[in-house]
Image 1 (cartoon, rainbow, N blue to C red):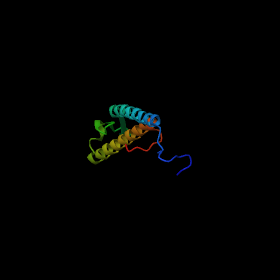
Image 2: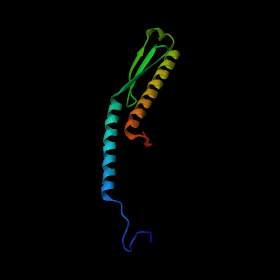
Image 3: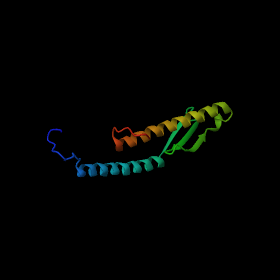
Image 4: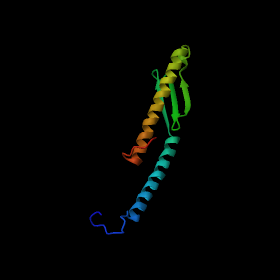
Length: 113
């Protein structure tokens, strides 16, 4: 038997400590839910081709707007490439924004987002 243990007695974790940890986790979950709602409502805009194409994505990674300078309408391939580049950049910006906002709540805890 370990030092300080008496026969028939089992070591136990203090209930108050466990309840406090559960309360902290529930509080963190509530804050994460609030931040996720804020992220979902946020939008990020990015452009490509010197502003010839601009796209906006929201926190749900939905493309919500596309703006195209009429001067680039003549070159379909270039236009397609510019749309893809702008959409990818806006999505990257949204991912970075979401990660930064969640880290404010979770600290250094690695959670899958």
